[in-house]
Image (cartoon, rainbow, N blue to C red):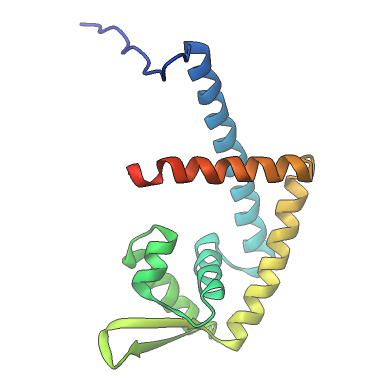
Length: 162
């Protein structure tokens, strides 16, 4: 049995072409994001022998300069504690991260970048910024600021719905 497609949900006054335009926007955002991510992954690997998840964990710790709980890193990156634990263990083994117990509580690990980790991340972050600037070089500063502002307001409109 073949069922008919479900009718598209539209906002008041929206047409099917409006929903198609939004669908095209989402596809273009996704493609752009995947392209930039693929380049970042390849360049992190070739230039720093690092992975994107490793870079992301170090970035979170760099922003939280006093360090973070494992659960805070997971929440910030929107991944499970299990995903973060393996990455943190490797960063500790490489001397980029230190782990300590919070107030002596063995159930909570407090993670921070070491001096070596801060230096290594600063180099990676500077290169990462250059790569993104290169890849988005065709976007004017004005357009970049407008799109960023629009996407930020869009996020705040729907993020509480999840």
